[in-house]
Amino acid sequence: MFKKLLNKSRNIFSSKQTSVFSAASIIMVMILASRVLGLVRQRVLAHFFEANDLSLFFAAFRLPDLLFEVLVWGTFSSAFIPVFTKSLQKGRKNAWNIAGSVTNIGFLIFLVLALLIIIFADKLYGIFVPGFEIADRKQVVLIARILFAAQGFFVISYVLTAVLESLRRFLVPAIAPLFYNLGIILGTIFFSPRLGLLGPTIGVLIGAFLHLVIQLPLAFKLGFRFRTKIAITPEVKKIGKLAVPRLIEVSFLQIAKTVELSLATLISTASYTYFTFGNTIQLLPVGLFGTSIAKAALPTLTRQSNKLGEFKKTLFNALGQMSFLIIPISTFLIVLRIPIVRLIYGTDIFSWESTVQTGLVVSAFALGILFQATSSILARSFYALHDTKTPVKISITTILINIAIDFVLVKVFHLPIWGLAAAFSFSTFLQSLLLYIFLIKKIGDGETFKKLLPIIKSLVSSVISGSVMYFLLKIFDRSAWVKKLSFLGKIEGLENINFERFVLDTRYTVNLLILTVFVVAVGSLVYLITSWIFKSEELQFFLNFLKRIFSNIKFKKLPIREMEPMSEPPKESTSL
Image (cartoon, rainbow, N blue to C red; front, side):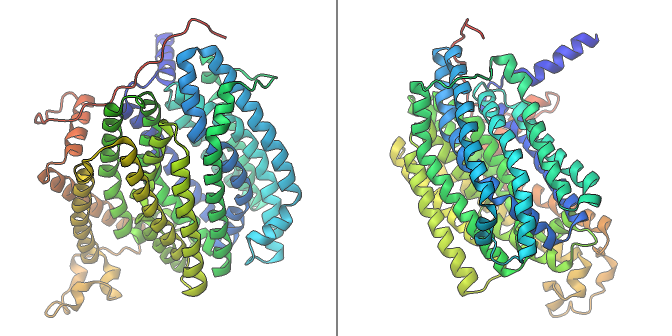
């Protein structure tokens, strides 16, 4: 009995996902868990450190993240997975040789560049954080040098992630970030009282190591092996060739993030904490519904690259399903920004001013969440067609526009930190628009408006839902009446209304939680009803999906889109 249960548990972790949505569902669940744990991590940090101190910790990530994003993330997101997936069709032995060579090349390049950056870190951070005091900058440099060791683990770990995702094992790679966040949380709790900011820094090292270790057993079971030699095969050369445009794009993106850090330090020391906290919240829906669907669709889009009919069906279904899920969440973040920030970060040392500033950042980011997720799917569609140049050119153009707007908003108009988030959202809008236009030209689809109709329906439904939530929040929040923030108190005949009879005192956490849950529940119901009235195919799709899960629930049969199959690669008898 125990052995049978153990084997069943192993099968859950090692089994393949056979459709884009089934794969995306697993990724969604695990990303949700990871993002929620990420919010817990930020809450723990906010409990132990003030906003000024946390800015030093977050700033220290800039150089390690820059190297990791350019060297690793740029390569595997655009070049490694398509080439490795194609290689699997020719034989697994060759594919594993490619993975081993790429691991060695990536780690050697990382090691050389990391040592150089560590040596010159003090001078580099002098440029990147001009608003910090000298003592603060020295602490940033110390933390950054330690963080490079963690990125070394990630260089290898993300090879394993790319390999497992190419083989359609999405669960274990999706679990790995949970252990990363858990490492930071434990490091902060146990080491911060004695070591200060070095506590969470040690936690990063622990989390990065766990991120690697959790993926090793399944990767080894499937055939991955570390190798002592580097074979520059045609496939390895192709990965390098395909990665170059993406590396350029990611380099520009990292420049933009560095500019954001520099400008944030000029606004105030605490501003970068507000920016980072707001970004953490908005990354939840982006990762949950944008990245998960895009990652799940990439192997299928790659296999369908020679069958444009199936390719377009997979692409537009993915876009419609993503929009249906992500647009209402963006609306929730805009309307409920203050309650959400207070519930997540509302510790004794996180002030009301910090709450307001972080809330404004969340709203500004929320305006661009849809476009971030859309860009993720559209860019991967180009990658599947082995075209990395077009999305890179578009991305670099919008990044440069983003940097220009950042300088104008901060240097000319002297806007607070939310201006940087607003500039980012505007640039992602331009990016998604241009990607869509060029992709439509590439795949030759003339029904542009018809393809966008599901997104338009979701937008209209969300506007209606958001309006209802806004009214409810102003009616039942006591502080809105006391501070005269509620529009109802300004309406003639209602100014003397005894609002104390029906409002909640949201100074207390339980009341704030009750009001937030109530408003979200009503808003969600309004969104679903409105979508049903508009005959949304995405709503029909998800009702059918739930019906398959809970077979005892009866829904009215509606015409739906079929789930896109993920084709099997040819089986190969050779094993290592």
